[in-house]
Length: 115
Image 1 (cartoon, one colour):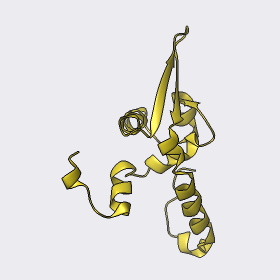
Image 2 (image 1 turned 90 degrees about the vertical axis):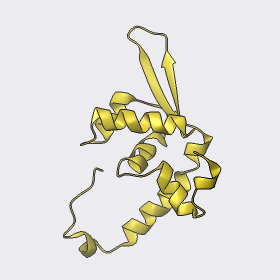
Image 3 (image 1 turned 60 degrees about the vertical axis):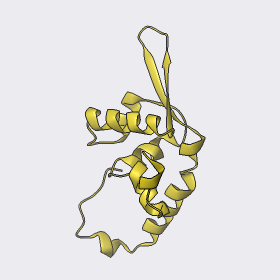
Image 4 (image 1 turned 45 degrees about the horizontal axis):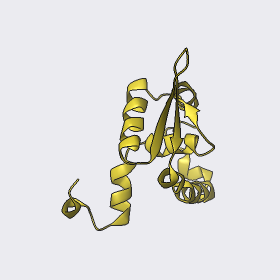
């Protein structure tokens, strides 16, 4: 992406990389350490394999996630946050703290989101 097309707003830049409902949840699942694809899929009920694959590829292209393939039988692939990806911990912690402080009554008419 050409530098001149980047928004000046940091929030807009954040959303360019982590847009969509699954992005932050995938990062959340990777914060404790490396995970295999099936571990991620199982931890995110409702996510399709296609969506998870596309997100992981996008994160890898943007330097948020590192993909490691092991020469084993059967083959094993793990995904792990890079330093850039681990830098999102504070953002997710702040989002979680804020949301937990919102009264439950606010959520009464809302549809639940994946864990």
